[in-house]
Image 1 (cartoon, rainbow, N blue to C red):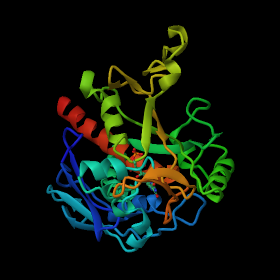
Image 2 (image 1 turned 135 degrees about the horizontal axis):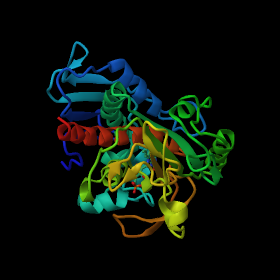
Image 3 (image 1 turned 45 degrees about the vertical axis):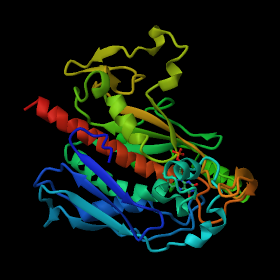
Length: 360
Ligand SMILES: Cc1cc2nc3c(=O)[nH]c(=O)nc-3n(C[C@H](O)[C@H](O)[C@H](O)COP(=O)(O)O)c2cc1C
């Protein structure tokens, strides 16, 4: 199994409609405090709720730690966490067994796996696999927090509604931690929710954008070329299904700007050196520069929609019209947001372990 990390190893297993999904996390130091309550609280943030954007598939998602934790501490062995799928409904997918949903993984995986069939609920490509990702990510987040490093996020856009972002206002950890709305946006949460409801009532879906920030990362984490923080972080973020773009700081906004505008100029308060802007997103030369890491992620609209779309039956080769039934989020952005925090925390933890080795 491919592992994008240098020091830790994350193996996620299971399928949308299998009896369980889980994760094996290797490389967590013996004696590290592990709070099951904290992991569960993080996994619960990803769960479907009774809100505009969620699927009616409402699972308890109870985390069971099978190994690697004793009396609240990592014992140095592999940590395995599992979640049992309790509301499997394969029938929802009966009518599309051989008809791939446009832009889901159905077509590509049916050819790759040589089955010519679409797996129930997307099989191993389902967003449900981000639940075990959150078990591993929750552990990483807690380890980072114990070192004063916070991995946080907010929703920046949903559909055509844009809220505030690190580009439009000063965003501190406090600002993000005190967002009062259920939809974690810095502004325009009601309008975003309305955009989801409108798409939903139209049998459609909307995508959006999540911004993630890391506060408290020391200067010097990461290195040049493929050891660069941007690459390590991006690889982890692209592991979350439906992610189609990642940019740091000003990102694609750099194109067309002049150096005199884009450069982050240095200043000092006599004690430390900092920059007066953070267009670089806290990273230069692949190395953290002491400013908050800012990374923005584009998430596609949920592929499964009940609006009729063109597809082709893989069995008969005939063109068919498809309207997807079943339990789907009209917008996956707020739930993907939690999975993105998990991936980011794992990438940062992995890079910090290298940093620790460099600074023994
Ligand atoms: C938390 C989460 C939930 C998701 N739920 C659904 C869903 O209900 N229906 C759907 O079609 N896609 C859903 N997806 C997205 C698909 O898994 C994803 O679009 C698909 O695997 C194709 O991969 P790609 O978009 O990265 O190319 C979800 C993704 C995440 C992160």
